[in-house]
Length: 243
Image (cartoon, rainbow, N blue to C red; front, top):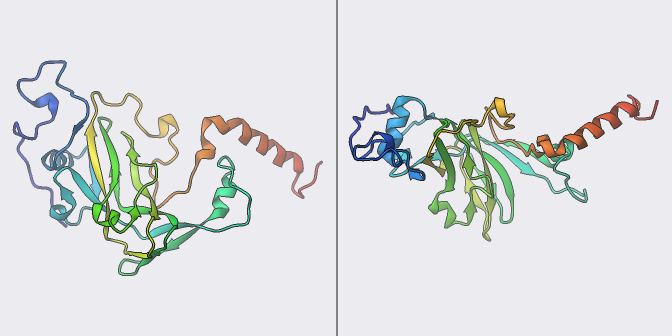
């Protein structure tokens, strides 16, 4: 496994607050994207974690880190139900099927298909960074989309990253676990997040392993519906009838 080289800070890759010549109002400039030198420095300090990084030279790009495809997939089944209610977790769970593909084998993504995949790497994002997931242009030229809407990895997030994979083309494409499929770009915040992603704020996907189906039903706006459903289940009794 590649080791992270020791990097001595200099003007070219210090974080904004450390650079000379900055006024107090400029020291934490927003929208500062980390370069490869910045990324290596933060990895070396240990507050930014991306592991395993088996080939540092290949995966660390000029302003991003390439992430690889994991072995687990959630496939969406074609069903006869009229629709899926996002606030009903049992409907969502019935709609997906887990598939495991070993490295060296292939997962065939057919035209029009949508599946959830996962990164092989696990990440830990510090409170002063925001990460965004982007697709690799080489796969984009094969009409493979890496994410639909979930492109943000919040400050404080720990875990693997679920990928929303779809094929917009006209030909099936073979995806191999272990191949580089996405890239992670890091933006330094003006100030660290006061309430980063995590248990304290009830974040649904913290420490996830593998692809995770939607948990939107756990959102606060659906709390009343969950309570009503639980009451109805209790009132129906174990045999499905009323008391």
